[in-house]
Image (cartoon, rainbow, N blue to C red; front, side):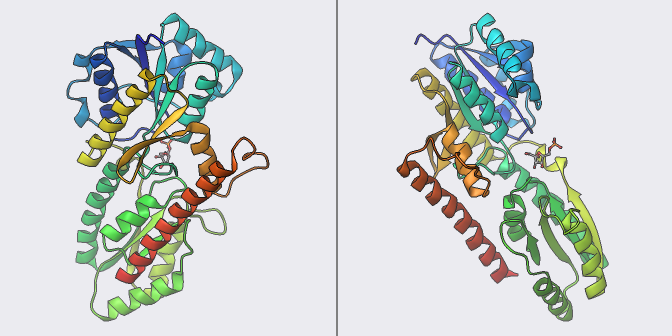
Length: 356
Ligand code: F6P
């Protein structure tokens, strides 16, 4: 196929590093003599025909900026046939030959739908949650975690002054990655994530022992997806119970959208640049319906439907028939990848407990 124009969009929750991906796409395409257009506000802009021309000058210096210069939205109509028809019209009217879609699982569902309608589309992970099982790494994760570190280090200072415990809830949707890794990196005395059972009593005993040894400040990290029996955020009740059981004044602190902003770290700029360049190469090589992933520090690809089904398997959300389209070897590979991810989290959690 004679490729003349690539469209790039960002969709779902924004993530630091999305601009660096956009820059990489524009620059890599331009080196191959291919134009890039920006599709504003994700699939919503694709349906509305909200398209802007891009030149390499438009992306100078955006590598260091958080947010997404293309803006983003969650577009429900795109899941329906009427939405797809509007999108296909925009693609025809603007002579877009292929699309790079940056985001999380919702973005990839849209990308695979476009591919099935004959529009070459490549997905690229941009989500702070790091919850795409097919990839070791999602663009935005490192910056979000560094934002958490900065906040928790500050909270630690004031806790030390007042001899308090701070319970910090962090974003991540159903994924405990941010809470687990930042919990280790901030010396938390407890980490609560959905993936591993939490022993609250053991944590209370650790706090009491440390208090007995003269420790003044305590940090507990909780992933936002963890709920108590009444469906309320687990960290709020936990804060009250810690105070009641230990006598240590305790405060609850929710780090939500604040960790999604800010200049991307080196890790995110690098991942974004390598993945963005790879996505353009794939499109120009005639590939479609793939998600660009990082495994063992190399760029690899998986079919989008494979990646989405693997996620369902990992989250134990498979429905009857979900695996019908896959070969035995695909299913074995999914089982292996899901188990590797579970093991990685268990190992990291056990190491964290050893260090508490
Ligand atoms: O998926 C990214 C994320 O920031 C999650 O961590 C969080 O649960 C969700 O998006 C918040 O969504 P919204 O920005 O729509 O409130």
